[in-house]
Image 1 (tube, rainbow, N blue to C red):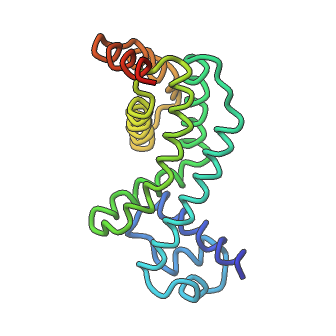
Image 2 (image 1 turned 135 degrees about the vertical axis):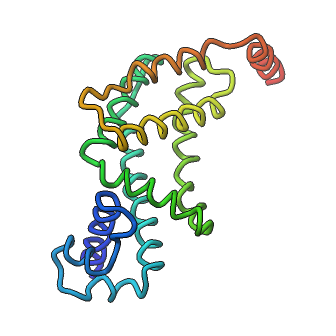
Length: 200
């Protein structure tokens, strides 16, 4: 029973990410899942419930990916971090392109359904925590703020690659340049960094 529900949600992600929100119907999801007609409606009483289920499923899948990334990545410096992040973005816009596109479609859905926003963003703070640990190690004076800037940049790069695919997509140089700028502390950052260390 649980496996069939997950199968329906996987299909919902594929339909949403590859065909758009307007094509997200029970019939399209059943066809994509290869299940009997009426299966999706048995699990989700209406389209709103289906979207809620897809939001939770996308978040769970991305949580697993980020945990695997954080567990496997052991960057020794900002350059290695840029390379690791670049590989992750190539994965997100390659093998997992449909899921990534579905996530952006859900962001747009949240403009009319703001109650989706907490679920769509709940995993972000965990990612900020991992990234901030690395950035702090590499000398960032404001690691959490800098990690949020990095994540915003990553979303922009991914969105462009989804909308305007580049066969030679290589996000590493841009990420490297961004990290270089963030870690090259301004005088104000140096003062704040020094004060925080003097005060413990």
